[in-house]
View 1 (cartoon, helix red, strand yellow):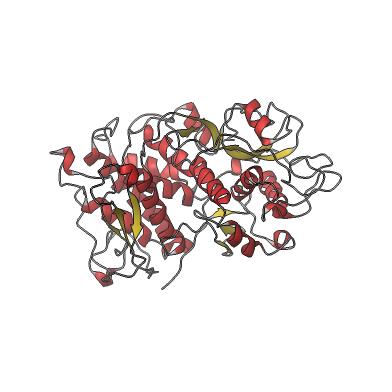
View 2 (cartoon, helix red, strand yellow):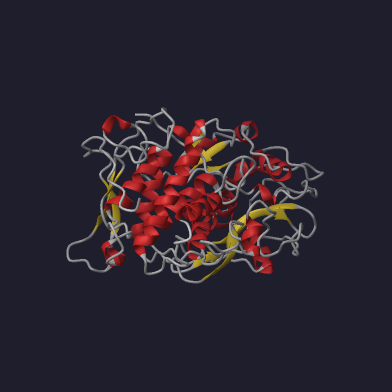
Length: 472
């Protein structure tokens, strides 16, 4: 078994608008260790999806909000280089900025670099952001994924690609030497790319003095970070470059062991869930909403793309928004203005999204051995898509069926792969085979009582040929 673990391509480089300044204090205002004594911010509740706004799709031109998120500085609702509010604690700062969900790093009114966490949304709501992909916004709207079980299935499919298992992996931490520092948790938050520090800030707010609080680090009398997460986050913020080093985190303790301990804490799990939702599911849902995307399988793959690619392009690396735009172009002028009520057409578009992402990964040596994760989603799409849109109801993207990771992207050894001619990589992976299903208690028609379940990789019958594409 080849374990492939990739960190999310956290595209928050645009937050690096100016070099960090600082006063004589620790990271968030206390005189010593960062994060101690922080005040809880935002609302309670565990969120599972993002918010409904953004740009037009198909042949439409991008809106100003969309353009702002594609490589331009992304500061959330306040687009000034420095925020309009002074910082005392997360709760009051977020209230002043009119944010109630997510978090980010920015300069406060006084020019001090801050990482703030503003809370999570209720499960029925979404974190509405403008521009898309800033990671901070306001709870509202309606979550298109209504129940927990499809979210659990999505998390399991993400875990197959991230950790070669179907666990949520809240307790995972490792420096996989990809130039992003420590890769941590259920979606691979990174110490050198601006998202892990938001998770830790959330944890400090919810549980001051927690086992990971010491890793935030310290500032000297001049306000310069000298160690910990803030040291690397300041560098990331000021340079826009991912930070691979972890020595000044390791100097503060055994980070991997302490993440393993924190991973069992519901407060830390909530922080991972809420930040993943605000950063990655929110962007997926907002990008999808502009196209009328409503189905769980589509939103799940878009979420997985957001967390692996980031939303916007970064240097030579393509972001999720561009992958979705390439799918629009591949669909062509017949693409509907909205997929709402058109699951067959939505499936056709999803097929283009998965293929375009596979093509991007095929060109990158670091990604080539992970191509098969695309085949898992593609096979599920093909198996549950009719050969035409007559009737539309014959296509099912709900995820209420078994999904198996036994298909290949380009490796012909198990029969015809999903894309036998367009992918060039011969760097074939051999990840484990899992089956993810829906657990329905006897006579339970109430989906709130359903849950996702996995066979743990115990019942596989070997790799198989990819199903025939019903939307070529």
